[in-house]
Length: 172
Image (cartoon, rainbow, N blue to C red; front, side, top):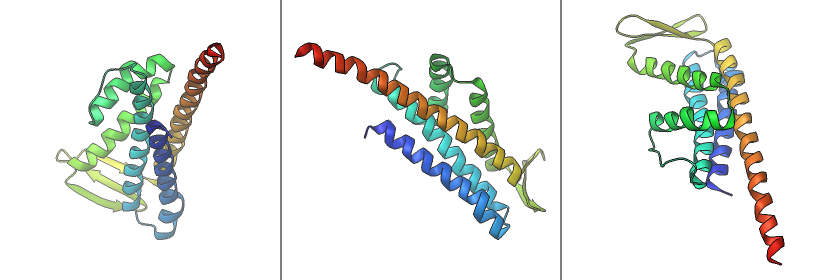
């Protein structure tokens, strides 16, 4: 198994974890803080899928070496990978919004429950509300994103196998 295949597999596991938190654990416990945990796990899943495709491209030497930070990886993904594979720019916006939501949580000084939602307010009292319905929408979008990345990697692997097989046939 290649490194990027392992990363993609881990991404799918994280996606299942986030889905389980929202669809099972949160429904049973009715604890809005679980929504934040699910959002964090969902963000990890999306970032791992992005990293899988980046590592594939790096292994083919198609992109420059990038750092381990989210901003470095996201920059290369948005500027090089998205145009190359025709990935929807909606995914770039989606990933940015997930990151923005988590950054808002880090900056927030006040966090509280309101009914079944989790509300965060920063120093300027800009509020963001995390609900189960919002997270279900985010999960659906993440599933589509990870599926698209998986399909790209499968297609690319098939294309890279064909020339190798042709070379082996011609050697004989």
